[in-house]
Image (tube, rainbow, N blue to C red; front, top):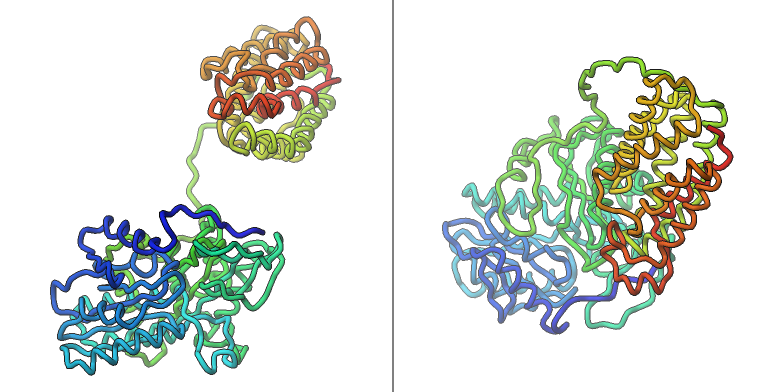
Length: 591
């Protein structure tokens, strides 16, 4: 797997400053000291100032969290490099007053040294306000033996520390109290990350990936540090199980950092963090699996935070963090409700994602169904041969499923890439209702109605809507034929119903042949049915579908693609090709 190495920037040397200027534009309350790369909010009332910072490349951390209810200042170094002492000292000077300041940073050597030295220099200067430094070490992938000298790495759990500490500061607490709650939260945090590849730093040469296409790395840091294990790509459920098991495990003396009891009394805050290049679609699935896993272990999830909080540039990966809340039987300065109150307190900064401030919903909870009136029995219209009717539908569905790769490839050139999967989903769903007996082959009106419902529910996008409309029109036309005295289908009944269904479809689409859409082969097929029969009509549909290679798209997916390029690549419209695959499967069916 090749890492993403394309970046949009003016100059790698000015990227950090350019980014910070853009960030400050989002929030007029935030100021920017460009010389020392400090974003800050000038003090408006006495409070313990909260500062953080470190190397850039972890956006929105840390500058994106400067604002009400969060940080007073963030000091930004170069990409993956700690800011120097002068920068940190400037940040401290800008926001520290009589009540002092707490610097919360991730435990990396450069940050520990530079932020620590700046705090010591402030104390020695005699300026008002004490300044203290708290190093967050929440990475459970680092063993105690590995961390003996420099300690464990800090990861996304750092965000929870300064959110909670800042809320307490807003309530007027002194430095001792703010530092104490920050230390307490830090002691009950566990985070582990996973990456599908390493990120690429702008302005550097692109390196070779050490991960195969089917591999990921468990326990990665946020500066391209290697993880602890390489794994073949598992399912989300399997991956989440491994990650959360490492955080909650109390049997491994090397990595048992968080005091879980695992007796059904544990309560947690879950933070799902995107490391930079995981889609929102995937993050939603990861979040759902994490909550599900915790529920299965009788660990009560009191809050869920999910989003992009601390990245590693464009790393395709994510991390999971658990904050173990105070137990009811523990002798603790804090209660679970207090910690949640601080976490839920209002906050305003570009990087802070929306949170509900409530416990997560229960996945799979029973929903009251809307009671609908039962339909009356459909009039009867039987196929000539029930078994062959079902066999023809089955052949068409299997033909679509087999054609998924070619349809997908066509749509990647001529559309948005989903045509094959959309048609495959509909075909599989229809096969399922045949297997269940819901589509029985006894009454074509009922069966076409079932197909229309299945297509509506299981096929997405424009194709799903068009197919559903067509089958709804076909069902109505067949019902009309039955009401006119027909008891059994004939070629005339089918061809007449198909013509009416096409008329129904044309009420809702402007596409008309030749348009480079599915209506090209569909109309060719229906027009030929009365005179050429099923086999001849299928041949005409094939010709019309193949002809779309040469056509200028007048509607549908192809209308938005470069037409000359489309012609040169000689790819048919995937929607049209799907129609051809369907009618080809119908060959041999006698009405």
